[in-house]
Image: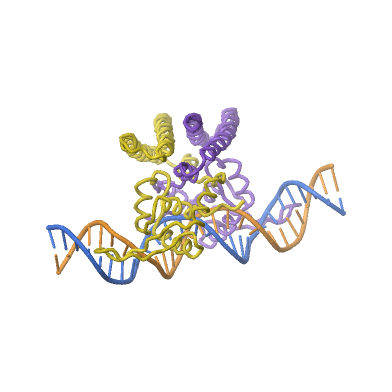
Length: 181
Length: 181
DNA sequence: ACGTGCATGTAAGACGTTACATGATTGG
DNA sequence: CCAATCATGTAACGTCTTACATGCACGT
């Protein structure tokens, strides 16, 4: 089973919120799902062109008062159908690649110091992430006009929280183990 | 900071255990670190050729009694240095991409049924993984001739265990939430 | 006048999978 | 003899990042 294009899915997903430019998409992705997804301009713009060619989006050049002209993309019927089809498909699990664990796996080759630093750096990163999750949760729960999406957003957030806690616990254990004899 | 080639690092790492062929590498990677790493032949063979060209490994064509001729690769001094350099570098965190969460994030667009199935499938996958971890731990702990590496292998395993438990807990919570009104 | 943010894009190259092609040996 | 496993590789394709190029508008 061939994996479907995920950048495509992400863009269609956000365009289902309303028409947006490539620049908007980049920004909204960064502000909403950066914990588990990212897209670069180098992917976004060519993909928008392709989606347009395939009739999944319509491009409209807008020259709003002030500000330079923008290319605003709008989901078509076909695009909506494609998005909904993707949503109904089971996820294809990607092959795992965790460079951190790969390094740790070969830790015996090096000074333990290196492995310890690796874990410490990870702990710091996780601490930052945990703080971000705290902020995000506060924001989401404060929202009065809770859209239907919110329960789903909270679910994705919750997985992040549980993961980060598990990983922080691991860091503690690992540092203990690596400081031993 | 440019990310260094990780396939290269993985191959050099395993070649530090002793000379191996591309086929061997594929097998040993699959049997030892498949929980957090994978390599395909399509990467391994071209990469071995490149490593050879760069003088990081030596290729020796062996025609052992019986069996077809094999290309066995051996780490050179330069290759060892390269590996150890990689080990001493901090890990560069890769941009995240979790298709499952992306789908769930847009769950409000679809029948809740789809999201529920997504979580259920995940739970099954996690259950399998948990069982594998149990087996691996048993094997690792039973080993009498504990090599120095073992503590590091156990650390990578431990992270897997903690993650899988956190994620299973999430599945429970998520299914509860998604079965509500 | 200048920096910052808005905005769109391209090019090079690395990374990675899948499918295919090929053929030897071993065990039933 | 046939299937499975050993073994090496290539080709096509898709994915993705980084760096670069370009230029407008707005505030100071």
